[in-house]
Image (cartoon, rainbow, N blue to C red):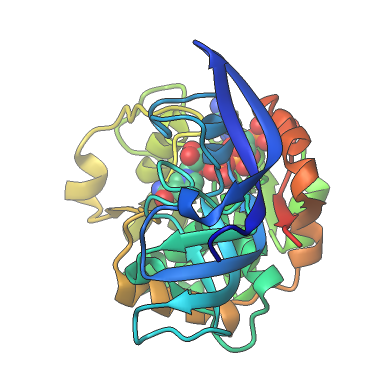
Length: 332
Ligand SMILES: NC(=O)c1ccc[n+]([C@@H]2O[C@H](COP(=O)([O-])OP(=O)(O)OC[C@H]3O[C@@H](n4cnc5c(N)ncnc54)[C@H](OP(=O)(O)O)[C@@H]3O)[C@@H](O)[C@H]2O)c1
C-alpha cells in the first residue's frame, strides 16, 4: 500500500483556534499502527464528530485529524488470526475518530480488539444506520431488559426521544412489545415519534417535576434516559417499585438533582451506559440483537445518507441543532 493514497476528511488548525475541514489525499503511512487495515465503505455522523471537527480538545487533542467514531467496511490486511482479508467488519467507539484517524476516510487501521465481525442479517450500510448512537440505544435496552424489565410491567419512558439514541431506543422497544412513552425534544416531533412506534408522546414540561417532591406517582416500569438533569431526576422519582432507569447522556444537563428515596423506598436501579469502552462480550451480544430480533423496521425514516463531501454540511446542521435522526456517510 505504500506510495498509494486514499481520500479522507481532514480537520486542520491553520491558526490557533481556527479549524478548517477539507477532503484530502492521505498516504497509508499516515495511519497509526494496528493489526487490522479496513477499507471503509460507510461511516455515520455523531455529535462527537462535530465536536472533533471544531477543535474540542476533550475529544481530539492534536490536528490535523480525521474524525469519524464509526466505520464499517472490509478487511484489507490483518496480522491478527481472528480476521482475514475480505471479512466484513465494523468499529464503533474506543479511540476511533478521537485521537485515532477515524471513519471519515477510505481506510482506517485499528487494534483487532476494537473490530466486530458484521453479524449475519445486517449489511455494512445498516450497521452504520445504528452506529454509536444506535449501539448506545441497544445497549440501554440490553441493560434494561437484562435487569428484569418486561413489557407486561407497564410503560417505559424514553427521553430525548427524537435524537439519534432516543429514536432508535423508541423503535427497538416498540418492536419488542413495550408500550413506549416518548419525551419530545425542544422541537415538536410528535408525528415522527408515533411513526417510530411510541404509544404516547409527552412534552418536556410534563416530564419535568418543578415541585421538588422526593417521590412522584409511580408511572414507569423502565426508563431510557439520554438527557440527564431534571428530566432524569423526575424519571427516577416516577419509576415503579423495582424498576430500572438507564442513563447514557447529558443532552439537557450533566447535573442530577436527586435524593436517595427512589432507591431505598422503591428499590429502583439506575444503570450507567458507556458505548465507548463497552466490553467485547457485551458488545458482540448487543450487535447480534441489533441484527436479529431487535432489528428496527424504521431505518429509512431515521437515517439520511451523504457522500464524504457532504459531511461538513451535516456537521454544521448538527452544531446548529438542526439535524434530526441519523446521518450515514457513504465513503466510496
Ligand atoms: N454514553 C454513551 O456511550 C453515549 C453514546 C452516544 C451518545 N451519548 C450521549 O447521549 C446523548 C444523546 O445523544 P444523541 O446522539 O441522541 O443526541 P441528539 O441526536 O442531539 O439528541 C438529543 C435529544 O435531546 C433533546 N434535548 C436537547 N436538549 C434538551 C433539553 N434541555 N430537554 C429535553 N430534551 C432535550 C433533543 O431535542 P431537540 O432535537 O428538540 O433539540 C434531542 O431530541 C448525548 O448527550 C450524547 O453525548 C452517550
